[in-house]
Image: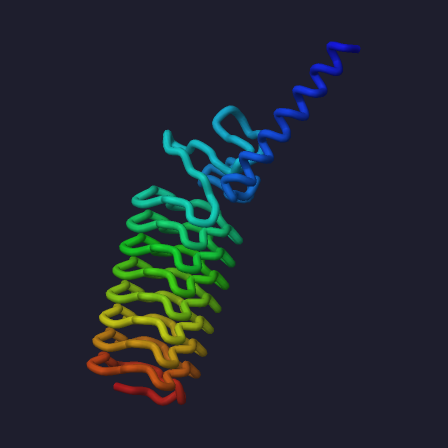
Length: 226
């Protein structure tokens, strides 16, 4: 009985330590999924810990607010609903990643590769996306309020219903972008390339369109601008 009692105490100590580590890191206990389908978090082998950290292809990843992923290869990761608010993802490869409903407020995504990523309903308000690659990204109803997208590449990006109020899109490439019902009020679009962009029902109230380039567009009122 004493032996069993010691085992029981040891089990509870290990459990408590695991919870403390998880809470101290401010990380979820699971949710992220690697490209191969391996669950991050939980007890899925010796490579994973209960703190929301894990090793993938020899690199350690810890998902949570303020995480550091500069230049990390996260291509194809499935991260719906993940909280990466304030995270540093500068230069990271998130191509093809699933970030639907993710919290990326104030995240640093400068020069990040988000091509073909899924960002539907994601919150990127105040995020730094200068020079980011968002080609073919799907961003229905995403929140970009006050985000910095200076020089970002949004070629054929789908921003249907997205909120870009007050966002800085100066010098951005929005060629063939879908901006149906998007909110662009008070946005900075100086020098932006909007040729072939679809702007039906978009709100451009107060937007700065100085030197913005329009060609063959469907405008907010449904008219065609050659």
